[in-house]
Amino acid sequence: MLRVNDNYKNAIYESRSFTFSALLNGNEQLPVRNISSIEIIEIGQSDKSLKLGQLCNNQLTMKTWIKNDHIVNGYIEVFASLNGDDSSLKVPLGKYYVNEYKDNHDSTYTITAYALHPRMNEVVRNINSRDVQIIISEIERYTGMQVLNKTMFTLKTINEIEEHTTYKQLLA
Image (cartoon, rainbow, N blue to C red; front, side):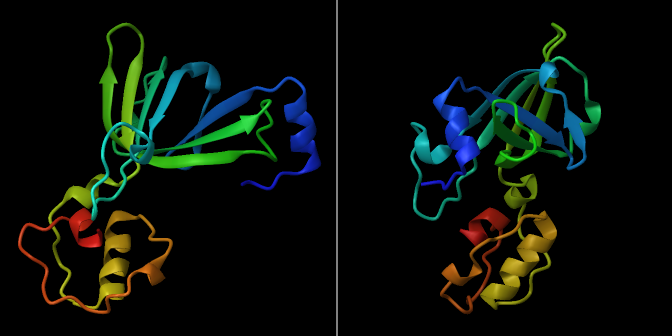
């Protein structure tokens, strides 16, 4: 359960609305008026099954009316705020790495992005250590992602990294 302040409680008892905002590549605010839709699919709550050893890879699909070619290899951070209050009650909904940017040929563009960096699907290279904590650090360095709870890895070392193993498989 989220702890909220009195301003939040008072705001939701009356009329309430949620406003979404998107930040491109960490510095470019995408105006809300240019976003026609945002959909976030969370694998843990969808009709897809989550198997042991898999990492959740939430998907963002966003349609916009403005052309923005420099987002192709970038990322999008999505936020929600209550009653349009962008300052104090901004809630992060995730960081998504762009996988596809498509021109719909009707003055709209569709961006498909995933919570896991695309590099997580690449075959492991240049990790020579067998120490699990060093492997995690190397994955973080290469992908730019951060493992928040490194203490959950109780295994101290691994015997080998099999050929054709991806970063996602190694971390899972």
